[in-house]
Image (cartoon, rainbow, N blue to C red; front, side, top):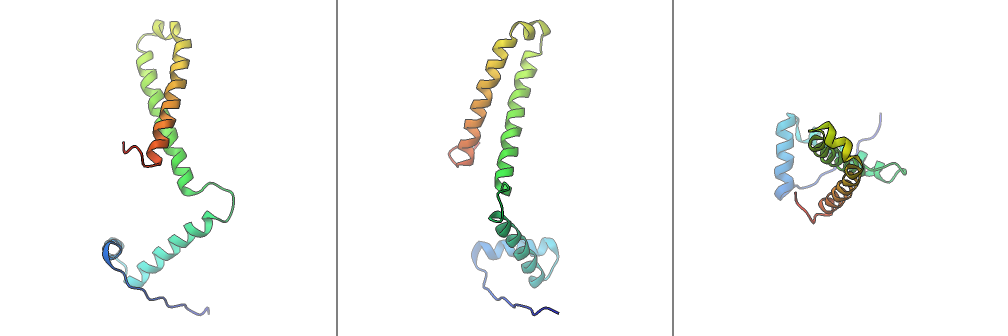
Length: 119
């Protein structure tokens, strides 16, 4: 049997409010909630510096970026596919437009992730 390590801390302000909300949602006692949250936080913190794999934030940023790219491209395709003749005639211009929209999307996502643009 392993020896336990009791931890005692005081929660104040918003941290206390958030902890109480989580405790009510989970239906657990204070000690069980604290243990769950501590395990979760340590798993994130310890894995963040363990290897060269992308962090959870990096993965979510990449997912967000891809979703924005797909959304922009769907809008372009919807507009261009209104007429097959138009699409065939403008295929070269459409490729340039997609590149432009991808670059714009990347810039917008970068600004959003840096906190400069709150879409």
